[in-house]
Amino acid sequence: MASDRDPFVIVGGGIAGVTCAEQLASQFPSEEVYLLTASPLVKTVTNFKQVSKTLEEFNVEEQPSSVLEGKYPNLKVIQSTVKLLQVKQHLVQTENGQTFHYKKLCLCSGARPKLLTQDNPHVLGIRDTDSAQEFQKRLSKAKRIVVVGNGGIALELVYEIEGCEVIWAIKDKAIGNTFFDAGAAQFLIPSLEPDKKDRSLPCKRARYTTDKTGAGQSGVSGELGSALGPDWHEGVELRGAEKSSSRTHMEYECEVEKIYTQQDFFMSDLNKENSKLGMWPVYVQLTNGMAYGCDFIVSATGVVPNTDPFLCGNNFELAADHGLKVDDHMRTSEQDVYAAGEVCTIGWEPSPLWQQMRLWTQARQMGWYAARCMAAEVLEESIDLDFCFELFSHITKFFNYKVVLLGKFNAQGLGQDHELLVRCTKGREYVKVVLSGGRMLGAVLIGDSDLEETFENLILNQMDLSRYGEELLNPNIDIEDYFD
Figure 1 (cartoon, rainbow, N blue to C red):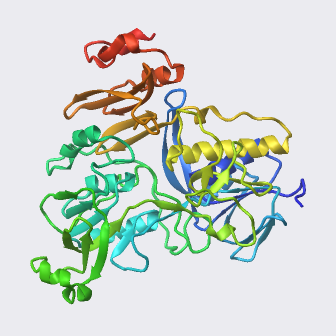
Figure 2 (cartoon, rainbow, N blue to C red):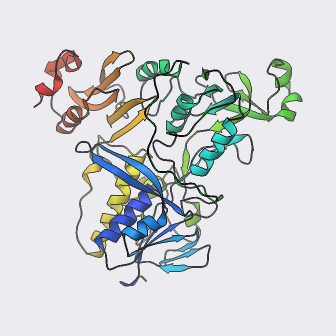
Figure 3 (tube, rainbow, N blue to C red):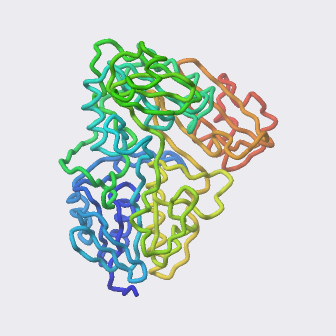
């Protein structure tokens, strides 16, 4: 059983874990807090800005663990992976032989890439700092790559790459299906043409590198580190071997059927059918019948919650996506064990305007809320579900445009019971709102529309907007004046 003298222990040096550890160290300055991470670097939130009630912006920086320890004297960072977890004994054992008996434990071990295939040297997943540096090195010698996937990493990559032909294999009918609809995709596609918009200013974020390979920041043995920051590509030259501008060719509604090594390809029937493919290190056959040779393949097809190291001998309840199921106080099914960030999956009935997406903003919010829940239980206080779970909100940047997502921005779960209003100015902005029964349930804002706070209020207030009709998005009307 746990003792009052036992420390708080957090596993994982990503945003969820570090946020949780900082909050606990701050709230309990006389108690020990241990953060277990496999890397000497941890992810920290800097330049935090509360944009509106639910929208927040911040930078993510990699910093030496000594920075955290200097800020919080009671916070100790242990650089080692977790070898064993015994929840009945409230015990965590690390690879370097240390044993920790915890009062409360929070698992923030993140997720690992869902690679197309394991152990193929020509297939690269981009997840943490080490894999991003490996990608940059290999790209510098490449003339053509195949990118498979349609999420955030794929979107950022395809836009940022220069001097290399990109074949982009997308399982959906439009790019960025996770984040926006086909209309927004059409608005963004011109940004992929060779004469792209001017780049944004170089990122001034401090960067650190480490020689450590193998385990990363998750604090879990043998796994890659925590996810890259939202602007990981800023200041990193993603340039291929060609002097000309990059060319991007999209293959829609297809997946990878088979990957061939050079030797296997020349012995296959595919070579006979596609004799003009030329000499490449690796070949990809797609389900739509197309085939391409390339220098390497980027697998950007999502992630799997990194739960495996904790399951042996314990009785965690898992969600369908293999995440640790947590209740509305971020508790797992095991006593005194909490989870936050990508490793967990919510097990409560969410607000009609919120959904879980494994994003940086939610990692920070979950880590912060998990710490508050752990503290409340120790202090025997009650705590309500945090307001951040009331409305889904996210700010990011794609193709050099500011992108704001609010509520049911893609009409998630609404079936046919909704209507869309869209305003689009080519090269400047794309604004879409989702309405049902005259009430706004979601919005997508691409570009500098400055409508995010107004729309957030309209969604939260659930005002009946029927009488405004299409005037709601009339660019000649200052919509903010309507709702002051």
